[in-house]
Image (cartoon, rainbow, N blue to C red):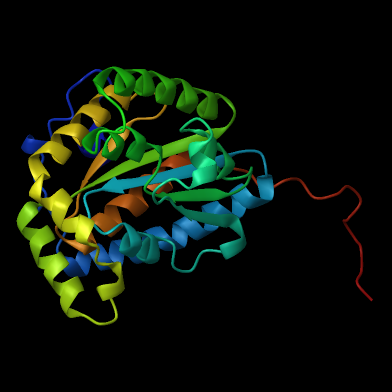
Length: 266
């Protein structure tokens, strides 16, 4: 699955050729069973990562509005130890954040050694949304692509494994989700007028995302395009990618203090 979803470094992300409704070989029941297995495995690996306390994992979630970032976090991280996870949601930069370079607030939010960090939106807002609303031009965006590649290379070199996921949502599915959000009093607070503005510029945003994924999918921090029309598919796919990343790290429980053999607790 990982190879199927991966944007090969140096190749076009080609989002138009990646179906948003792909079931990745699962039916709903099978995906739910597999997700439960993956969450159990993820919890064991997280415990080892936390105990080892040497490296970290960062999950970056990007996607169009209503692509399921919040729900994916809830489904994948159910049952994990909260003290070993750190979720950060990035909104419009504050006045303080605007007084620094665009990666300043990102660096402050990175997971500590032993943690799994989850970014709900990320520094990629600063090359997609920032370009769409005219905060930066194409030349500045290209410079930022280079800054991001260098930044992520530094993270990888320092022991943070990146799992970058673009939740690939179809336009029709987005319409249904936004309508459901607007109709539900419990979810209406998430609806913003800006959602309609960005939806009206769907093709432009998709192009900007495609260009960002193409420019920043690298051997040390590749992008994965996860079909997001079915939430049970995106959940199992993201869990699979995280488990594989942790298995690649192969974190180890530290050795116990010497001399514990034969110790009795009285």
